[in-house]
Image 1 (cartoon, helix red, strand yellow):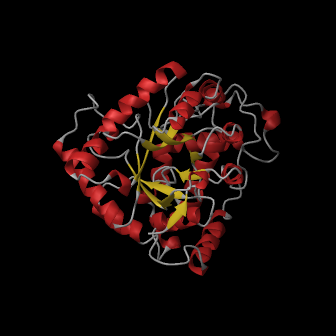
Image 2 (tube, one colour):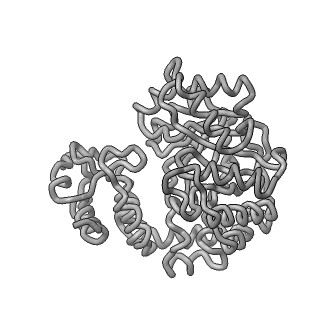
Image 3 (cartoon, one colour):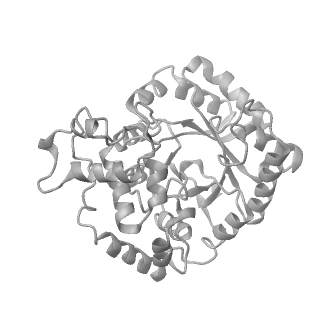
Length: 379
């Protein structure tokens, strides 16, 4: 295992983090009742994580039973000394007044008296950013808990647009940021650099799942990344950026740890082999004449269509045959939902895109219709 300093926190954490979102049967209410099966699965993963040198565990109030599960596994079942690992959790209290009680409930669930890294969960749009960071708001309350030693460091997680992420970083309220940055989504690279300029820790969210559903990669992609798996290559791509400090892996089975071990088993993490794979991926992408247009400059008008994301999905489909990914993500669009905003590219919605903002000779509306027809799973 390799370790990197998590920005201004000064903590040396493993470049792979054990994420806590994907344990079996962990989303049903009540959240404080955890089955023996789930506890056993979590305990086995924690033991494997420590065996492989992982020293950072990540969870969140929003991950169902996860905090309660880790609280029991780490303290009651395995009785691991608290000094042996760093713990990150997240939450989204809506007001400063409710923040202390919110965090105290998390401490109780986790069976600990302090949280090393606490992230405000989901600064995903401007309204959330302004509420969270307002004077007297929840982030200010989290900073007070940091001053009291209950929280070690305050950060934020985000699925938001680049401008919102940059503005949150620029507040200087935060010690770290959890964001998306992968080979198949490089839009947030400027935010990674901005965070580094402020000596913030950078935590990459879900490189295997949100990074392209890489554990269900098509044969074409597997062949390109050989002798590495797509998961291993993508992790090495992320870690080739020295400003990226750790990647969250939601490992739930022994085989996941075996694949993870292949990421950190040799130095350098980025060399001739990885560059050769990068060049092959780039060559494959160049075969589609529309893959160079990212859609961020196109005005969606009143359509509500997330044009950049659909164009990105289309490139992943056309260039690398990533149909499972497109099925998965396209059908997650939810109007007005801040975690993954957008509506489906129906004829009615497509008609609302103003033609004036579409680049000349770029058949955007036809491409959207084609994609919707291929991947929409609704009625």
